[in-house]
Length: 398
Picture (tube, rainbow, N blue to C red):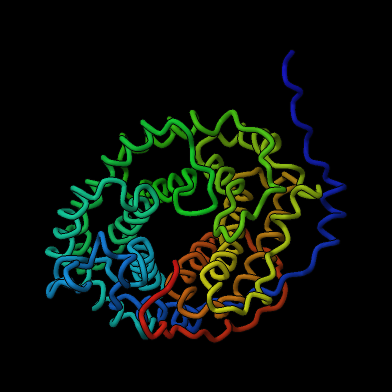
């Protein structure tokens, strides 16, 4: 017996549901707020990752752990707690420099980019990854491709030099990702770094700016193989513990780019529950992190703050992929703004365990919503202050 086609969204129910939702208050974002976010990577980009987390990548071991004397000349991504956070923090430095030419910190950002993305630094990265096995694959690899694309599309003479420096690492990762996706038997649907859909989305971001037909074909081919037949995503199970990604929304976001625009709406109807249904409310209601006050739990707290931005980012892109007449579009944008407002409010609440990476996810959302049609999301307010002080011993747990 053929499967029953999913029902079309109920416009009346969605309109009533929208009226029941709170009106989000999303902070303003302009030059002042860009300066605020730019300070975050600057506070950690030169701070070496602590042992033992960075042992495989950075530290030498003898009687006691020690840093090589030339680590800042033979490594590029040694700060901001871990490798992938250093990469996405570097991406944020590039993105803010591009988007805000009058940014007061722009010169300092560019100085740090030049120091970290030197030819010898990247050569050291390439040499390390030749024998690094699965270290940082696929999440870190995908972020590096996005970083390279950001550099390559920056109309700046110095950026062109840095892009040429980074290119060998980008090419190495591109080949490895084709192999990785083609041999992946089962997709990772975790709400953390190994998530297959999220890595594919980041790769597609990179390929939009810097085409690579073989890699794009591998992503499209394997996304269809792994996800096209999926139905009834278990949204009621989210969030899982202290995950910073929504597995259901990450997959829907990816498929919004993979499927033809005329077939994606029906696929989404079969994949996600109706937005007004109780099963979807676990994604609509931001996680309250205010009661997490034990500093030993701040790593998980930072993940849940990041989850708000990931949801907002994914729902914005899903709404963009639907026809403008689809009644889910305004509701998705409204729920996206609700999550984003929660994330913005909580930005400073995890200290360094959040500031070394959360700005990146805030910027993913802010860039996505900037390209979306204008929407009324309530009055604006300034971003909250944040403490970027690192723990005294350099330890953190992300």
